[in-house]
Length: 215
Image (cartoon, rainbow, N blue to C red; front, side):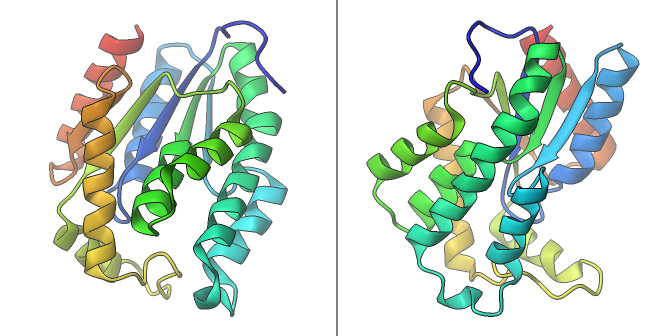
């Protein structure tokens, strides 16, 4: 579902390394927006639709996942993204809702492009094909030091780490640097937050920026 005109809704994407605390802050921002009278739609990548969740299972839990090449990983992520854009995000924006997305196209730029060393041009082309003209109005990066990110992953409940969470420290250093580089290059769309702050303090800073940037 392409957007023919600028929609009434807003798309806010959350980005950051594993363990950055995105999920907590998405739910808190959703509560603020709902109290202000806005319809809120929360989704995640990969996932957000039945097709996308099945793709997610292939990406993170497939028994042969460690053999997955970077190109396949990129195409799977963007396939799930294409589906959620057309099935969930674009219709919500047309209705005037605020969509909160746990990751969006910047995650492929960083994880598959920078982290997996895929060339920037094909990653950008595949990204653009997947999202069409649906782009975030605001991208919030929750930044944490790599050591903190890995420590948080280890402290999570008894679930075994998925394929992305099992990556080494060098990979996650590249991810963090990639997000900071994107934010520096596109300050009009990005805002970076200190993910080591207490959740309540971080919540207040995020809400202040959302009000300032999007009204």
